[in-house]
Image: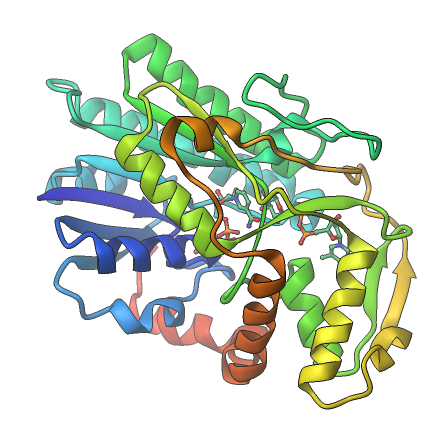
Amino acid sequence: MKNILITGGAGFIGSHVVRRFVNIHPEYNIINLDVLTYAGNLANLKDIEDKPNYTFIKADICDFDTVCQVFGQHAIDGVIHLAAESHVDRSISNPFSFARTNIMGTLSLLQAARQYWADDMNGKMFYHISTDEVYGDLPLSGGYFTEETTYRPHSPYSASKAGSDHFVRAFHTTYGLPIIISNCSNNYGPCQFPEKLIPLFINNICQNKPLPVYGRGENVRDWLYVEDHAAAIDLIFRQGKVGSTYNIGGNNERSNIELVKLLIQIVDRLLGRPEGSSEHLITYVTDRPGHDLRYAIDSSKLRDELGWQATHSFEEGIEKTIRWYLNNPDWMAHVTSGEYLNYYNKQYPGS
Ligand code: NAD
Ligand code: DAU
């Protein structure tokens, strides 16, 4: 039995990773450590909360003493680190919280792992989940990020993730800590907080609210269904080469305006409105400062070395995602009201 600490497991991607590990890896004890910020929502994990191989701990990754206690009490053998401040717009208005959680929080986990595993690092793993945004951006005319692309972060968010990646690699080089990093493109799917483009716009179309498209909507993102990311994380955690980096992408580039029109078309159809009738909601607004133009990921290393490939086509994934939000209006109402924060903060008082 291996004891795996997953940080940020109550968030969007983390909840899919926790569910996958709890359900398909009974050989692992999963310890989900999350401080439950606005983005952490235990309702995402209702279906697995009573499973015998699952434990939830409400704690802050920046609280080094508590993190050390968790390593000791649960005899942690492996870490999958997802906890982060994740939204670019928030990093522009409050960069401090990004430096704190993403850099200092990662450092706190690294130091705890290093100390706890000091006598024997064999078979241990510190797996850090990062983003393609550390590479900067690409021209519309072409090119891909590879694992060798130079870091060129532009936003406070991506700068903080780049900082954390550098600390993770430094702990490998300096102390021999067994690490892996993966850098992934934009995820979409159920349970994503409606500050990110896809859930925000689905919700706004349903409620006939404006759809604020930044700039002219020509920026391009490479979209990956969240369960395909969780499957990649599972594979890399178990079979990835220590010290390596893997890029993960959906090979599925869309301009924002193209994506927004597709969302409108599908939501209109599913709500029985004339298709495209919600296009009048599109509102071009002032661009995000430092807005990266295009991301595109070359994930051939992951495919060739470990045999990973995405199993959801974009058409399938986006339809599934939209249906999930339309069928779960209570989830949306709950997170937009902030009600869940009060509930869980009462249930798990503390840090
Ligand atoms: P999210 O914002 O939905 O969830 C983050 C989780 O981390 C929340 O549950 C939150 O409560 C928790 N958390 C935040 N600060 C914490 C702290 N100090 N201590 C403990 N827990 C804390 O994020 P997400 O979109 O699921 O992203 C997860 C990870 O994947 C992040 O590291 C992000 O950088 C990375 N990533 C995200 C995407 C994407 O498209 N969403 C793509 C590539 C990489
Ligand atoms: O590439 C991976 C990254 O993808 C992750 O590391 C981040 O955690 C995640 O938030 C995401 O970053 P983006 O900035 O690309 O995602 P977001 O959903 O905020 O925006 C997607 C695109 O849509 C981007 O070009 C900005 C644009 N946008 C976004 C919002 C919220 C709008 O035009 N209007 C909006 O209201």
